[in-house]
Amino acid sequence: QKEVEQNSGPLSVPEGAIASLNCTYSDRGSQSFFWYRQYSGKSPELIMSIYSNGDKEDGRFTAQLNKASQYVSLLIRDSQPSDSATYLCAVGMNDYKLSFGAGTTVTVRA
Amino acid sequence: DTAVSQTPKYLVTQMGNDKSIKCEQNLGHDTMYWYKQDSKKFLKIMFSYNNKELIINETVPNRFSPKSPDKAHLNLHINSLELGDSAVYFCASSPGTSPFSNIQYFGAGTRLSVL
Image (cartoon, rainbow over all chains, first blue to last red; front, side):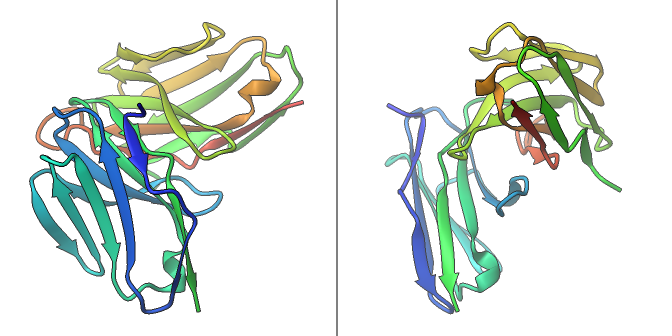
């Protein structure tokens, strides 16, 4: 079983719609959870971090964490063409190590 | 002012050669990392150093040798390059101290092509 699994893409959404990305993880002791965005040919860029159960909102992005279900999600509201990228879920195994999912590629259609 | 910088950005070389990639961070972080991202975009940890001490050493061929002369620098030397080493190598750094110890910031990447 992979440590971090993301819903397979690609995910295509129309401009203005909500994009929903899901991630599950295997280590029940994980304490920190992140979403990174990676544009083609660029490096991963942190867009959200979440540490406790519930929702965390930052602009058009909302991260949701449910530790009991070992589930993290990212919602992108009012999707824009500039949101077209690969989104990586990362889970903190300890103070130093992150395990990354394989990524979900999102395409926002104008 | 770039926070995590790595050089070179592109590296094209022949099989069997030895090459190095350098990384420097000016964020004052204690921990640095090397990742490999293959053609399927999967990002895999290779090594990590905390204050010059090796703390993560994943299953990586011993042709790969990291070196951290100080906590702001982490270099990666690769001996006897093989075709399968072709990938993008990312350097990253994190504070290494709670509560945000493992928020990681990435360099721009080094695209290695082995011919």
